Length: 441
Image (tube, rainbow, N blue to C red; front, side, top):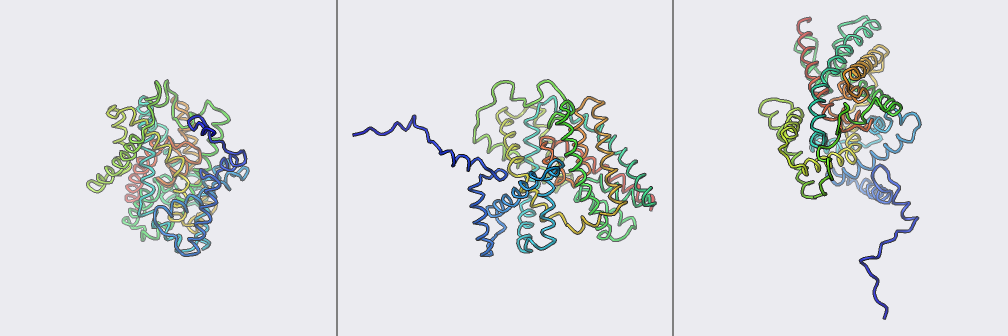
């Protein structure tokens, strides 16, 4: 009687043809499971049973977003200027406007996106993970130095953008307050909305009408920031000395604090703990916002920085926080962008911004801000490409713009600095603009 095979030493050999099938991926999804998801989702759609729950939306957003991603990255030229991100974000907006995405399905996606607070859960994982896995010295120096190119870029962009718009339209007041300032206001919720409410209280007109004028400017500025950041990323690839590929300044030991020896062994409990820690800091931000009106993302960012600087956390927990960051940036970014495109990017409003004066002014503002940050960053010893990309998020759509810009350039580790540029830079811009508008009205 033949003895059974030695299962301890035998290896499972996968045929070459099957290996090649599994090596093909649509985004991060292996081709066989991508095909299965397409079939299952088609059946559910046919039965009118695409629910706004987590399993269904995860599958739907994953399939749709990674399909757009694969198309975008295969178009020559377009892929080099952030094509995958642009397509994933703005194609669904067009499909909703053209009613190629059924209204009920768009409603379900919007309900899921807004009810789960998908964006801020994502930002929590990115911010907490990237800060806690960052070199402590780099963190301290980076936060102190980023305000220099941010301030210089903002002032230069205000001056150049205003002069360019005034030269084209002949209306300096409208150029400054309804084009240049909204570009630098920090997005929609934290920028455009409080800005137009303040304008309305100063007698400029109904807030809804003013927001309709400002919204397309913010959307188009976000597209420009994605494109110009992608161009900067290509410059960094051509001239490696100009970029840290996700770090804003050179430093000895520029990496994980815990990487001085062997990294800690993977521990699923520590990974779960890191995830709950990110959620806890996110809810801390929400609680302080409810109690004191403080911006929740900034509170979360400050809390994460405090944990890092005090060395209160064990190195293993910091390391696994980096794994949470890696998961979020790899698996969640594109489904999130697709949801944003469906629920928060009105296509018709975007088209309204395409007038010569508005487009040229927006381009001049964004280019001036990023070019100034590039030069100042180089002057003070920072990586100019990464510094300019961080400052460029100041001209995006707030948190959604940060995600789009940093994912287009594959620099999601810069999210903490982008949040400073967006939140603090935007808040300062809006405050000064409202004071000036009130005094000039």
